[in-house]
Length: 305
Image 1: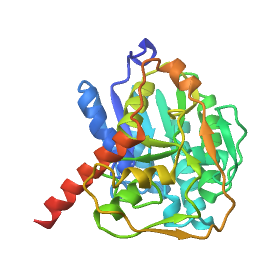
Image 2 (image 1 turned 45 degrees about the vertical axis):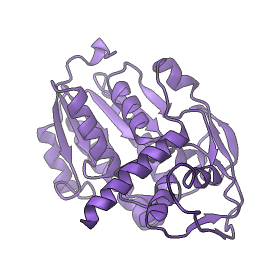
Image 3 (image 1 turned 30 degrees about the vertical axis):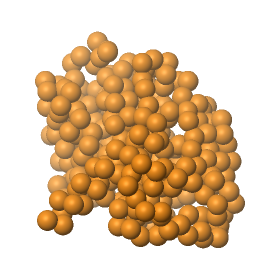
């Protein structure tokens, strides 16, 4: 249920609309909130690393606007100082605009990476200490802190920080290590390579579940950090085992690569999310993998025609 606190929001601005999450979120919001003006920006329309381009957002930022920041240079592009600097520059440039032109609601898409990709912890909550071990995770947390600082001085503004784990589903153009990457390999009938025995426990969130939670929390009165998680961990082997079963695939060729880092399991509590959205339901891994496989297979078949 939408909160009266944000009943005056007339416009929703999506930063990073040409990406997987931004694009899907934009379509979801247009469908479920037809009374709102939805404006999307991608890197081809506004380069957030350039202050002179970001300043153009002043024209649409006001106290009847909500902003959802999905823009980020992914770790797969290169987890180094260069991408860290560019990612932080985006938030810094936006913060300069926000200082002069506050918005009613700012939603920042952070990441569970702030808790540390290489840190063993199976009881992660929003109160768990930050231990970012990658430039990507450090940039995410630094951006959180910067936005808190800027928006804290604006009594009419509100900040929501979402920390999801790996999100997968149809339409993801990347082939990162995990469900989406494995599915793309299976469709292409290519070998799947896993690190070690693939028994690390991880959270994988289906895209539709993330969209449901994010769109509802956008208008929720809550301010602060929420882990968008199901509370259920799976292993990479779980994903691999689902793919042949019931999907009409031949036995997949699986390769194992020696680990370069120590094995670390992750597990999350979703007590806070369930308190905010009591009726929230999550797609089981098998169902999400099957939906993604069939959608991507059909898209691949259409592309070959």
